[in-house]
Image 1 (tube, rainbow, N blue to C red):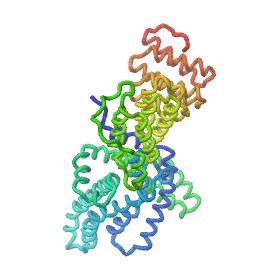
Image 2 (cartoon, rainbow, N blue to C red; image 1 turned 90 degrees about the vertical axis):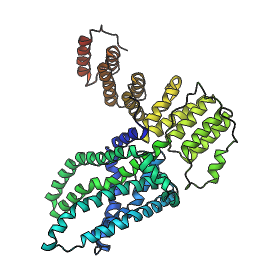
Image 3 (cartoon, rainbow, N blue to C red; image 1 turned 135 degrees about the vertical axis):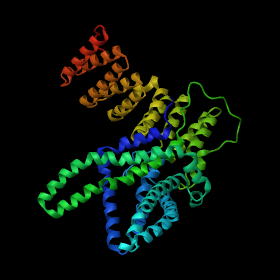
Image 4 (cartoon, helix red, strand yellow; image 1 turned 45 degrees about the vertical axis):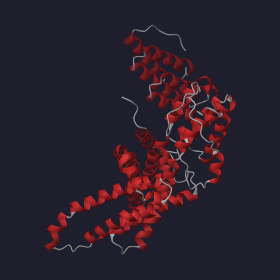
Length: 470
């Protein structure tokens, strides 16, 4: 089997990053905004039917979703409401596109839902109302799917005209239809998993709040139940942004074997072009990288300049940052290339695009010891390389963690995970060397007994002779 499509791997990375302490912190500003919106609707529009209140809620949360979706579209898959770097004009453009699309499908569904909601509920209508439950369910499912597709299209395109075009809808429902099911699964799982993790904690806090007063306990209980809903805009924005960003992920280009020169085309000064085009008009990053790679075969200096200009326009895009590093390596500008590669790895890992970092580090094997990477980045990269069965790459990352002053317990646990993976894969000799490495460099560790027992068990099972410490 080949590697899974880019988005499916990114969806897993987005959900993994969503189940974290950072997400709980990110919920706080979102919760404040959501509470303001909900209370405003409760007091300002209380006479409106429920379907209209739901429609207004979808419209008013558009800026929350858009801020995260645009950042994720540009490569920051762990963006939050506060941490995301989004141009104001780009956010306004998203909101306009999303509101227009939501109005197109939302108003008809809202009117239909209002008609059902306002039907008389007497005994003569009991059978009719019961039969309408399936209609309610169908309307709800249609609204959910339409909302997701609207966000995808609003994230993908740059103008209202493009959002309303048949091409945009063919893209969402035709070209990318195979990724819609993984997207829905990631949304459901991404909301359910944090709920299972945080509800016990919030439940305990609710009990404590009830001991203080009934009012504070009731408020805490309401927050506990609503917490997954408060986090939903962040997850939805990240996943929809990743859905679009996945299209810009290109296979890494070999530096040692440049591609054959393409037919000569008129030179494009991408730096000047980006300067002349407003930031609200998003460049096609994937096509830009393709053109830069083609130009590198004939004018590496111009290609580097164009890539750096593109990187300045999209500083959080991992693909662009990695391309700058590869072009600098190809140009023989080693100090700049190493610095750019380290920066690209940091951007990739922090943005949830560890596969981009993994591909890049393989292009710099001879220079990876020169990377200025902190232990947190090295641990995340090493664990990703483990999923690729890149034993040597993971080992380098975890050893580098120790050399750069990483937390001893985290470093040992990372090395133990690698050793256990190696043993399961039949690489007993390498696993034994890792155990020796831990014993040598952490002689006073509280894990020493566990490591020695694991080492002895593996020796007996594999019949390997004792190795000297690495």
